Image (cartoon, rainbow, N blue to C red):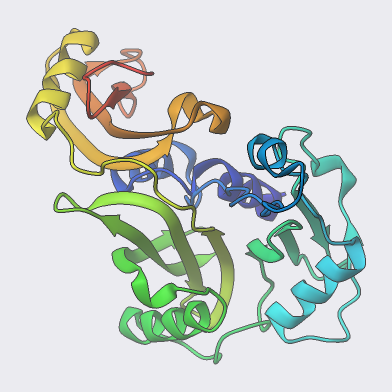
Length: 298
């Protein structure tokens, strides 16, 4: 059950900036990562008598078969003998390019983008990847970097934006996140990677990535960080003890058909409590603001 919960968090939170992700980690008690993206469209023909019509039509995605997807997983892990099964109960009609697989008995589970033919997330049992043995965080970072670099095209363009040790009831884990950075303000782009290592065993136990997407907008904001915080504080209506803000590119209203938006994602925390009987639950508010217009999107 714990691995299943982590798997769902991989799908829910890989796109979030560090501040929002950190807040979710505190609230959920689990790892945080970015939601997967379905990637770029398949090119269509631009020659012949119907070229104009074809260039404006939505191209039909070409999906690989389950057998091909399983072969991608086996190559990713380096275990050609792995026997995998489909997890149909995890399918989401809103994400037709994502398919979910597991290895019975081991606890290993994977999500594959069957259009772009890439592993989006992996929950790995001990001993599947990594050198083994006790690692400190510097050693773990080297292992995580080598693992991601060998599996993520364009990894050399990403920047390490977070790393740290997490003490959990199953033991210490070192987590590392790399992010595409854009423009002079280093806005978070679409591509991101996260790797987690069990520090006690030297095993890689979690991997997630968001695939790159061409950026189609200006990544220099007209709304400053302080202006975005002021807009959020006005909506929050309380004294904010702690404030986070991160500039990022995402889909407007988290809906790809609405196109990309440069946004400030802000999280505020008050001294007030949600309930006086719950001293560890202060009031929090999260706001997303268009970084070009100042419009509050969420």
